[in-house]
Image (cartoon, rainbow, N blue to C red; front, side):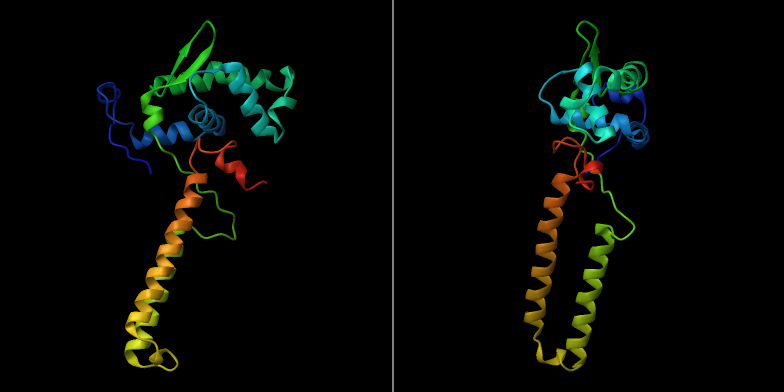
Length: 195
């Protein structure tokens, strides 16, 4: 869940959170999302060479061990010149020059980003829950008006069904949500669907 309150650089330096605009700007580029994922997944500072290797591997859909110097050279360059300075500007990372290490700040550690990647045939969770609530309301109406065969069901039976349906859905949603959080899995969430 993203909790976002601060709107300017001065307020962020006093410990407040990033604004929505700042977060969306950071996440608007795939390479920055990959860097954020790698940093949240790693323990401690990460060398820019290692970051560029992982980002290259994810972009090309290959194993990080198979990434050559020539493969990652362009990624390394754009990370150092463009993406890492933007993340440092937002105070979510610090960069040391010798050796060239990137370390997440508490602002990045506190930022939970969930990525819900949907194909054209999938429905978002919000629409799923609206449908489930609509089904429960229709069943309640059918039971209370005595429409056969629903008239045989008791309101208690309906309550148990609705509780089980929402409870099971919520547990499944929680488990799926854990896998779609940046930094929680080996690969970024947007690459999980490819496997």
